[in-house]
Structures are given as C-alpha cells and as structure tokens.
Image 1 (cartoon, rainbow, N blue to C red):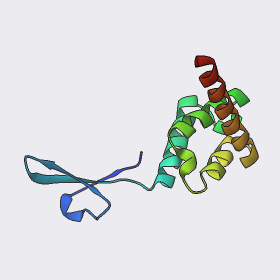
Image 2 (cartoon, one colour):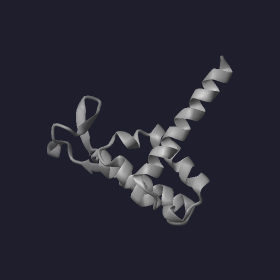
Image 3 (cartoon, one colour):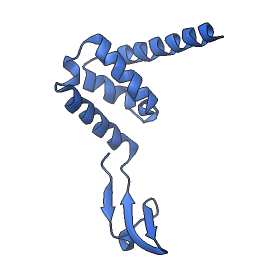
Length: 112
C-alpha cells in the first residue's frame, strides 16, 4: 500500500513505531489515504491485466463495490479519482454506488 520503513529515530508523530522486547526497532510511515487509493487502483489494474477503463460495465461495477468496501469514497476526490481510472463520469460512479446500496437493501428485506 505504499508504506515506508524507517529507523525508529526518524519517526514522526503520525508514524507507527514497532518495538521488540521493549526496544524500538522500526517505524512505519503510512501513506496518505489518497495515495493509497492510487496504489489500490494500480493493483486492480495489474490484477485484471488491462487498463481499468477498458473493462466491461459489470467489471467496473464490481471494482466500485470493492472500493466502497475499502472506504475509497471517503477520501477527498475519491469519486473523481475512481471515475478517471475507470474512464467513466462521476455520475456513473454514483449510479454504481446507488445500485449497490439498492441491492443490499433488497437482500436485507428478503432476509427478514
């Protein structure tokens, strides 16, 4: 996800310092969430073996569902970033999200 490993003496206030038997041995600098979204999209593209914009609609909807589960749309400009990667409009991404919400509601009603 793009984390950086550092010596514990270089750790900043937002870094995670790992200790072993009471001694600080390593610091992990986590990327900003917006940078993580770029890494996630790149990994999805590698997994599919083709640019995300070239996928069919069903595959794009699945990607939006997975990204929603990972919290990608809570990131500032997340919808715009995903729309650009998928080669669709923001409106289309919102439609995919609304579709997923409606399907989840239907499943919940049927389960009751």
